[in-house]
Length: 279
Image 1: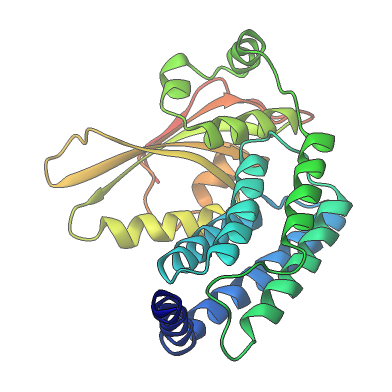
Image 2 (image 1 turned 180 degrees about the vertical axis):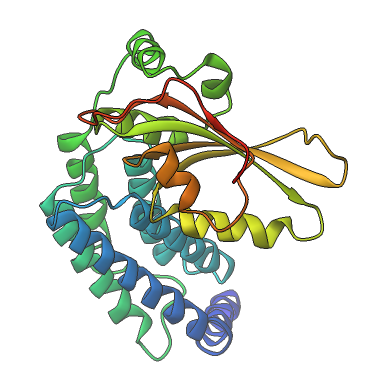
């Protein structure tokens, strides 16, 4: 009986900690998740690219998973883990996003919000419908999973796009999936070399990444050896529908060099050589 009383006090303390120290932060993260879900839903049903929204949703649920784990909310931790894993599969192209999954996420977010709006969320005890969510999500993944290409088929695809083994070897699973998707969608590919002073490279690189969003997609950003010891250099694999001239003119920050690997399908303009210097 005494041990039971102690156990109840532990749960009560956990609930208070969630309510007073963490709840505001969690609700703020959930608000960001809802915003990114709106972007995902809008882009998905309009036929636009939504990979950035998927990345943001993965990060949001990953953060929630960690917070719920720390404060002992095991069921909320599990719910966040389920959705984190789902968006990870989407990131690497192992499952296809369908309207059914979009509607399912909307219902799950509403349930999560209702639980968090309780005065003192239970630190233990089952969330009503959690098992249903788990089973339904597993069914969706199984139903819409993507088999993908074999290793030899991927190698052939990348070789045809003039992407070298050196570049491919530096890619993460997610980056390789984005490369594959951009090739399938007929995007052009290029390598961009940038080099910035160590004193302000973070601001310069942040500006580059911001401006890059209007021109295409940064697939991979790899640090490389700089020519000058006072600088840091990066080699960037970039997917785009723009010409090399448009890319070079589209950045306010300096670009050291740029090479085209693959032309945009349907684009009459083709560049055999990279446009170097003078940017």
